[in-house]
Structures are given as structure tokens and as C-alpha cells.
Length: 394
Image (cartoon, rainbow, N blue to C red; front, side):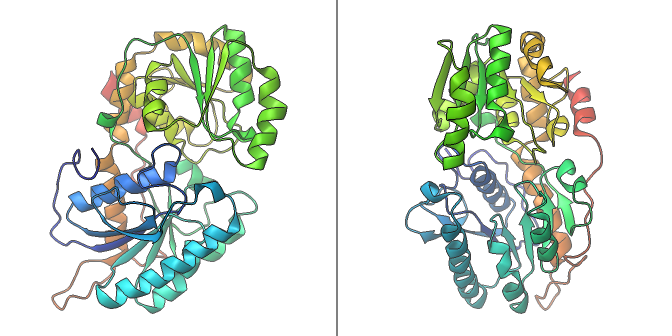
């Protein structure tokens, strides 16, 4: 079941009219691949449960408790990475937003797409502020884009590390990604295989996962997206030549298969070679009681409690010994860490707090007065999640 079935209802006294914008590539929630869509789905349900009026713009079929406005008859996942659907989606969103603002009113727009925030100046003329969650990395190419966007929108980070790498952008807060732990099967007894679950791109490190599993003498299951040209080239040139009869390439795992693979694995291998903004597959694994063996990169130290819910390595050579040591970690501690720190309740309240700072309380005349303009930063709690989890799992 989806929607608000598993989310406790905590009503707010001053509900907001919130419009969420999801990408057009996968269902919300997705059946398999689609980390952004999964987060948007959980956020929509959490906000509805808290009493807000939530409209979700996306593609495909409705799947959350929010009112769904489909802008595409079908999802366009086969065109992920192409410019046309991104730009066309932004145009469709702008038209829909104008209609909603004119007929129902909007307090705040929360965009989760790449090109969509370019519409923010239009929304400003309508009297509606825009906030944007940056779901990807901010590299040298994207930094100028987000710097220019900062004139019109407030940016929300998904990890402290993401924000630290570009401190001069207009960050107005940080909210970690989350999931519903009860939807992920817990399994204490593990099977004898390691799992790589992610897209086949050099920076995700599938080739390092293969090498580490071979050195550790454990079978490896690889599951992930491999349909873009660059992904196919990387797989054929860097991954396939390393494979043996002990390795199994699963392909893209749907929601059911992903849960089975994660729950049964001795560990999830996460040998990233970039500044990973978050890495939602890590909390999916830990929710199933499966520890994470990862290279230190990006948000990994924010998500994994080293020596408790996984093992963080500084060099690829450390991965194989860590796979063996993962046997010693407590699956229950992994799940407790996720439930305590990466639940949907935290997701909803975290974003709600940012919205409230941006739009402010409603006056007697019905007009909202911002507590802080969209250009003023709203600081998250600086308490270390790992410190909190170590206390919770002690």
C-alpha cells in the first residue's frame, strides 16, 4: 500500500498550498529505478498527512495521497538524459502552474527537476516563491547554473557535504532523503553474496565492486541501469571483461526484486569515486539490515555509521577485507539507524520547516508574511547523525 497508509497524521494549524514538481521520467513512486521520484512520493504523502494541500505535477499515473496533475500521458524514462523532455516538461509545468495559481492559489512551489527552476521569475511575478531540491552533484559545469538560479530560488541540499562543496550558493536548508522502513523487508540471516546496485557509470565504481568481490572470494550480484550510450560503453569496456561465472548481472531491478536482493546480501558495495550527494540505496540497504561497504566520498560518512551500520574505506584495496568484516555487523543496528534518522516523518517536518520560513504565517486577511525571504539561509541542526545513531544503537 502507498499513499498515507503508513504515515502518522500530525495536523498543522496553518496548512499551506504546496505544489511539488517531479521529473517526467518515472512513476511517482517508481516501480524500480527512480530515486528522485521515490523521495517526492514520500514527501507528498508526508505533507498531506500533516494537513497541507498538496498538488503533484508529474507524468504517468497517480500514486500518492496528493492531488496528481499528469502533464504527460506516459512516463519518458527511455529519454532520460535527452534535453527535449526536460525542457518540454518545464514548459508544461509553467502552464499548469499559471492555471493553479489563478484558480486555487499557491503558497510555495517545490521543484525537483533540473530545467523547471528556470520558470521561477514567472512564479515570482505571480507572487509565489520557489524552492529547489538539488538532487545531483554540483560540478564545475553545473556550478554557474545554480549560481544564476540563486537569484530567483532558494536551494535545498540533501546532505551537508553537498552544501559544503558550494558554500556560496543560496542554500536555505538541508533535508536528508528518507524512506518508509516498514516497506523494506528486514532479514537477519544473510546469503553469501555481495551486491552492487546502481547505474553503470565510472563514478559509481561497479568495476571496483567486481574486483573487491573476487578478492574476497564472494559471489557478486550487479543490478542497475545500463541503457544510455555512455553506460553501455563503460559496462562493455570496464565491467564485462572482469566478470566470472561467480558474478551475476541482474539488470534493472523492479521494486520487489530490489528488496529481495538488498535483504539477502551480505553487504551492499558502494565504491563511489565522486562526491555522492546522498546515495539513497545506502539507506535502502540498511533498512533491510544489510551493512554498507563503501569508499569515503560525498555524503557517505553522513549516512553510514562506520563500524556499526557499515564500513567506510579510504582506498579500493580496503574493500575486500571490509566485505569479510561486514559479517560481524548487527543487521538490527542497521535498521534502527535508518528508522531513527532517515524516516518519512523527518523528511516531512524538515521540508515543512523550510516552507514556513519562506512563506511565513497567514495574517487575519489571509496574506502570508515571510519569516525569512528565500534569499536567507535556514540552518539545519548541526548535530551529527552518526553521533545520534551511535547512541540509539548502543
